[in-house]
Amino acid sequence: MKKLMTIFAAVMVLQLSAQEKPNIIWLMAEDMSTDLECYGMPDVKTPNLNKMASEGVRFNNAFVTNPICSPSRSAMMLGTHQVKTNTHHHRSNRDVPLNKQFTPFTKLLRDAGYTTILGHHGVYTLGRKIDVNFKHNAIGPWDGNTKFGLFDKYDRFEKEDQPFFAQIQLKVTHRGDWWTEIREKSTHPVNPSTLTLPPYMADHPAIRLDWAKYLDQIEYMDNEVGMIFKELEEKGMADNTIVIFIGDNGRCNIRGKGYLQDPGLRIPLLIKDPRSKNKGRVNNQVVAATDITATVLDYAGITTPNFMTGQPIFSKKFNRKYTYGARDLWDEIEEKSRAITSGDWSYIRNDKPEIPYDAHQGYLEFFRPAVHIMRKLYAEGKLNAAQQPFFAPRKPVEELYNLKEDPYQLHNLAGDPRYQEIIEELRKETLKFDKKMTPVSNVYHPVAVPGYKLIEWIKKELPKEYARMQAGEEIGIGRIKKLHKAYLKKEETKTNGKIFKN
Image (tube, rainbow, N blue to C red; front, side, top):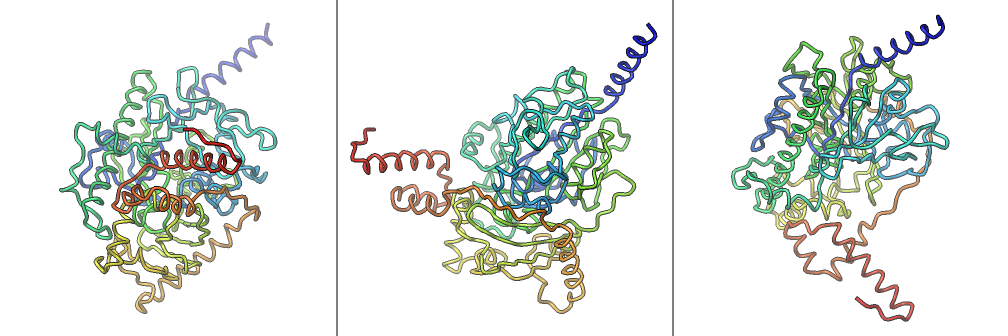
């Protein structure tokens, strides 16, 4: 009897301990810079995220470690810089198990008694994206040898799941064929004629419309955030659920996603902890996305593993002077650039200056209407000094920007002798990070993409579609890929001497 009572007491202690642990929801908006109303972004309304910021903490200097989705997400999933883990090449090494020293943070949460949940039934396309550069499955157990599951279940958090960790992808802000549809259904679409463009963007009707569509997606996404908070209230979970909101990389536009300038690396970061008495705080510390991972573990009472390069943000020991950014393979472009930022200064080292920013890869052609418009204006000599650098035939070897005085990074100070001392210091710091983040292996298994070949095919076989693209329209990569697949099937049938029938 005593033995049974002892077992019962132990079970009760474990249950109470589990209930005391907070639930944690990580909302990850795709392809978004600090383009929220609470960050001072004009022309957009984000009442739910405004409320979250007013009831929590807003971070002004949060940066991803790579401006492209899969390397950035790899770093966050491991809490470790993607270069160190050899997950830094976009869509690569998907068949390669992680080096044994690294463990996904969701596995650590599971070991601590958390139910891990991916996606949400109420958000656009269910929010189930993972997109990391190592062998994995979405759902199932993890041992890193024969089992590679990252989450326990999909879509729903229930009382019996507590304590739970849910990662929900807010995909609507990612470039896609749905942008026009979302805008058309909006009861208050953003007015293209009155919005404010960054000075490095040309003022053109097609560019204005594209920017308005982007803001429309943000407003749609803000409603999704409100829906999730409402669900927490209805289920009686709001008082014990920490909500974190971030972007996975910067906005998909000029200087944004794919580039180490501020619009590619700086992301929104809002954290609402209902247990905290500090409301509406603004935090100006320099924060890396890997620090968010370490912070999640800290909330769960888990000590940060030695392999992680992230640190718990709210720890008294938190100390980050710089974030280290890296850009490597992006589809068919084998790039290599490195960057650090102190929040006040941004330094970029381009190891392949011969590869221009406008490298004409397929992703740019399909997902950057502004590139087509501005490329033409550049050829005609109609871009101003703020707009020209993106289309130059080469990148500078080094870039240095004073972010306080020049937030749009219009003036590269790398060659100015007055800043020699600063650039030398930042060079040295970047080299230190290069050494510290040396990859654990040189395995390199990139996924092939159609890239240039698909664009050449459109030029030849679909000239009207190509003309629309050049005019700044998004022609829909999903639709084009289907047409291309049908074309290849038809050509294959011809080759086999058979008659192709529609």
